[in-house]
Length: 243
Image 1 (cartoon, one colour):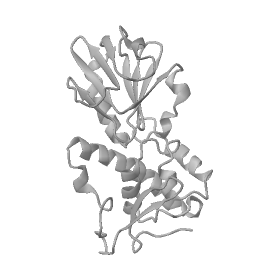
Image 2: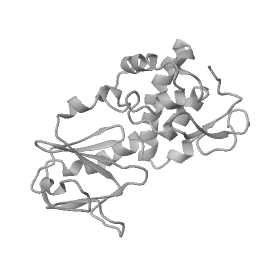
Image 3: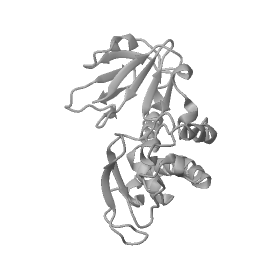
């Protein structure tokens, strides 16, 4: 599943289409995609893993699920979920989830929870963490209401950076460590964005998909943890458990 920084880069690649009118719409989606014909793309925004195409009176929300992709001015043999044809160019989406949003986005989304947003609020993240003291930190980091845009790669790398075991309970963390967790969720997301833009992301992975801890040489554990049951990569030697 693409993480927040990857969706942020999708938005960047689509910005030339802002202000352009859609002349034709195709695809196998069951939603009312024809509604976008003759509409002008007024803005393109993101909230975590959601790509938001904004029109005059509604927004198209695009979620890339586990294997969603898109192409600009190209097509492939995979069934086309949505094609937006403009006077100069087209945008094609594959294996994505689509939904039309009628309400203003500020009524639907808390942009202060988006780790890449200019509105990101560490203070609000801290308050939300305080309300879930029994949660594992591996689950808390993947909670999109707290850390919108954080996915499994970011989760694992953040916990490794701050030497925190994924099964630590949120309420057991010392205050400085909790602040560090919040700070690193944003800092690593910004690093992820830079490395992804430069096509060097995997070169910077320290624990994700690794077998040996680069700090102490211990075996890296690979376990499905928490209520999310997502894979956690961690070192039992240098990542401390607070329980």
